[in-house]
Structures are given as C-alpha cells and as structure tokens.
Length: 305
Image (cartoon, rainbow, N blue to C red; front, side):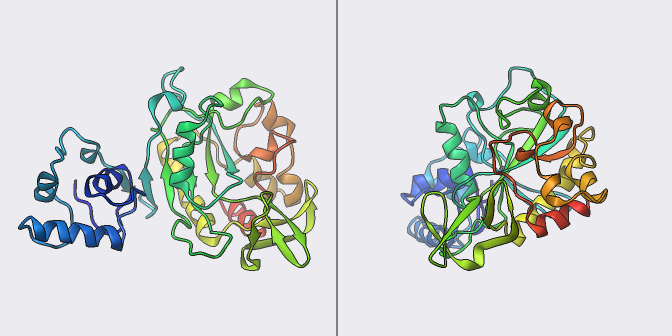
C-alpha cells in the first residue's frame, strides 16, 4: 500500500500513530515532513512517500495490518471516496446483504468533518445509527474548508445503518440507503448575526436565506457547491452499484412535475408508508426533522437527475 501527500483513511492513521503524529487520517504537509525525516534517519530515499521499504523500516507488516486494504477509490465519474468503516457491530448485518430500493439525504446538524462523524457513530449508544456515506462541508467559523465535498464511506455495500428512526413502514428503513451532509441545519438571526442551535456564530458567506420559512425556519447553514457536486456524483455512482435503486421518483419527480420545492421536501405519506421508493429527504418521513431543506442549488441539482 503506497501512501503519499493527499492520502486519507485508516492506513494514514496507522502510519501517523507509528510516527507519533496527530492521527487525523489525513496525509498533509506535516505528516510528509515527518515521513521524510524518518526516511532520511533510516537511510531511505527521503521522497515522503510510504511504500514497502518505509513500512518495513517503521515495523508494520502491510500483509496483516489495515494498510493492506484499499481505502480510497475513484468512481467512473471522478468522485474520490475514502473508506473509513465502522466496527462490524456498529452497522446492521442482521439481514445479510440487501438490495436498497431507495435513498435518503440527511444532514448531520454538526461540524464539517466527515471522518469525525463516522468515528462518533462508533461511540454512539443509540443502536447502529449511520448512513453509508458522509459528505464533508464548510466550517461555519471560516477557518478553512479542508473537508468540503470530501466523501467518506462508513460500511460496505448492501448493508444497513438505522438512519430513518421509527417510520411508518419498517420496509422503508430496511430497504433504503442514505447519505449525511456535514451541515448545522437551521440558524437563528439576532442583532444582524447568524447562530447555530449551539450558539456558534456563522459567517454570512455560509448562510442560506430561503426568503420564506421551511418548517418554521428561514435561515440555514448553506450546503456548499462542493457538497452538492459530490452528492450529484455519488448519486451517479449509486446507479452503478445498486441497479434496483430508484433515484427517479421521490423529490426529483415531484420537482419535475412542478411541485413547489417547499412542498417537495415536506412530509410525504407515500414515502412514509413505503408505497413509493425513490430519492427522498429525511423530512419526507419525519415531521420532527429539519434535514434536508430546499436550498435552491440543491433543488436545481435534483431536478436535473
């Protein structure tokens, strides 16, 4: 397994731990500098890339460690996806392999880091709450956006995470995949400033003003252009890996039929009772949820599917 600057995933974390570097799973300039120093100190070519000789010098057997597994891959449409799999008891394997028929879009109501999101699911005590994919977002404080549009895969194809909660028909939970967008959701405005539900101030560049209220909220943490594009490419990928998955019906069809976006994202009885699989939002099956909201850029992308 060759690692270099730009690599991400559990293998990078394993490398970083072995070298005494903060293990964030991202092979950045700091990790590269430490690798070069290690290589130089051990009589290796100091190119900053971790191949067989460097692994051996570190003392890690790549045949038995996680470093032997592929953790990054690129879809045929050019989307890079990093695998950071949950522990096996943190996603649903009770039913064997299943063939998802529908797909749901969520947002995390939290920070921008998709890797941290998956790590937190491993510690979650609510019972295997997860989606197969997470797409990183923008940092509302404006401290850089290194995770913006980054896609993480949390468990293997054809398995489940309980991401819908208790909805009308168990079938919709059992037969639907999902993605989380790293996003804080609705915002409040006070004194000309915007705040998340945990009172973090949000820079105005990251605010979406719908111009109307959706579920009683007008201001939202905007889904970024990179997030929406990564979502679009992910949906194209899903068509390849899940041929029976319906990504035509649901919100895309409602929008194409001229339904107002506000209504297309609202509670839908057909989705709730699994009478119509398709591409839906969490709000379509839960009246108590705020993910996702009809941001114009997201609406336009879904219309074009």
